[in-house]
Every structure is written in C-alpha cells, then in structure tokens.
Image 1 (cartoon, helix red, strand yellow):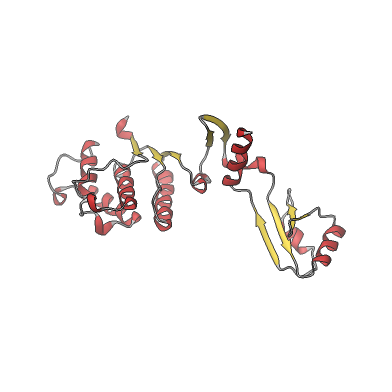
Image 2 (cartoon, rainbow, N blue to C red; image 1 turned 180 degrees about the vertical axis):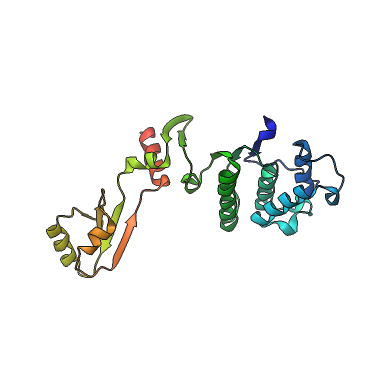
Length: 236
C-alpha cells in the first residue's frame, strides 16, 4: 500500500546535507523505482525523464544538483512536491502543498495535478486554506474546531448562499431604476443595482434594458464566501 501513496507534509522533511536530486533519488530507491545507483548519471532513463519533467513544471531545473541547505522555503516546498510525485502514486495526500509557493508555481502545480488526476486516475486528498484550490474538488469537507460543519460538492456547499447575482449601474440611475421596475425585475441598491438571477440569464435581462449601462458584472458566490458564512453560523 505504501508504494501506492504519495505524501506532501505541511512541514519540510528533506535531508539538508544532500542535493535536491539526491533527495529525490533516495526516495525513488525506497519506493523500488530503481536499484541503488551512486550517481545521477547511472540512473535509468525513465527516472531522469520523470525528474526533468517535474523540475520543469515547478521551475527548479537549474537547482536540482545544488545542496538543499541553501534553498529558500518555497524551493524546498517545490522539491517535496517533486519527491512525492516521482513514483506516480495512485493516492496523493497533500497537506497545505502550495504554502510558500509564488502564484506562477501554484498555477503550474495545479495544472500538472489536474493532468495527473485525469491521466493517472490518481485520487487526491487535500487540506488547504487557499479555498480556490478546492473549487475543482469532487467533494469537500469543512471542519471547524474539530467538527465537520459542511460536506458535499462545492456547488452544494455554495448553494446555501443563494443564486448568482447581476450587478448593473448607469450614469442615469433614475432611468435605470424606473426601467427595472417597469420590467418587473426585482433589485436592491447596494448602491449598485443588484439582481438575483434565479434562473434568468444575464443576456435576457441586459437585452431588455434600453438605458446605457456603465457596469455589467456577474457575481457568483465563491467557496470562500460559503466557508465564512458556514463557520460563522457554526460558531454562533
């Protein structure tokens, strides 16, 4: 079972006396990907391709043969990600995997993980405080003070916040207010005109309005919005 599992811990677990590649090579040997080889040059071509691919995804190709002791926190995190994926696990446990990564590296990592999920049929268990990372999950679980306070698909969890809304505004606000009232479109002013779509399309509403609009913006509840409300309700 251990050979089928990959783990990225929240705190670094690297050998600082080895180079980045040596850390990965030791991991590969422990997982049975290749017998012991004292140098990178003697490693099988498949291992070299896998390491090169992952290093390129995370942007540390030029640092793979440097001692880990001189790495920044973000670089250590990238190396741990490479190490956890090199044996192509069937189940991947990620504990705050992108903590300390720059935005470009976070985006590259999740693009790669999406590909891994699709092509390798890999199951990913993720704990994160970056809630946008959980938007694409099949199922999410929100835990507050050790208790499960929400469970389901992201859409199910966000449904508690209601439908998406359309924000409108115009230079002639009186004309827009009168026109929305005449069309029978319910709205609230916050101070912009906020309309709950509730099954209606944006195109349908905007097309019916003659007043020149200065703002058209759709606003969909995010997972972060749902999290804040759910935790606040659970704490009250």
